[in-house]
Image 1 (cartoon, rainbow, N blue to C red):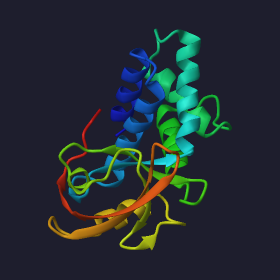
Image 2 (cartoon, one colour):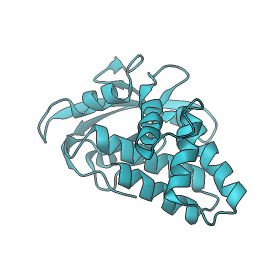
Image 3 (cartoon, rainbow, N blue to C red):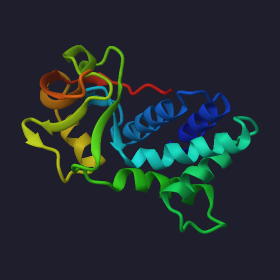
Length: 199
């Protein structure tokens, strides 16, 4: 997990472009989601925690700005994101401590009006995509129960449900429309054996 996130961040930073923030958010969501929900009966969604990812994205963007997108090492990326997550992190913190601090920050929020569960990744060919879930949909309920008060691990547990492949879960999402409004959609998803992709 540690090597996966470091490699992901390094690759994103070194090949930085105008989609850096969006790609970083999606990759971090997938990495953390894969750690919380290992391959098995699943629906195929990478879950983000808006606006918690913004602090991480901004730290990466600032690192790229300061270095011109070059000469950025995995350790530099880890240090920037960890200190954005936990500004009081000791100067001599180890990479392991930095990783734990950043990941704890991203996982610790509970969903509310201010922290939303955004579908940052909808894995190609996975059950969620087949059902109609789209990237950037906001999950608001699972099996007709609002997710308010849950953390990321709690939401993943609901989505997995302990059910075998072939079991069903209903996911209600809000979707941003072109006119600025939000529409509500409920999809019944048949769980499958999904291996989260590595970006």
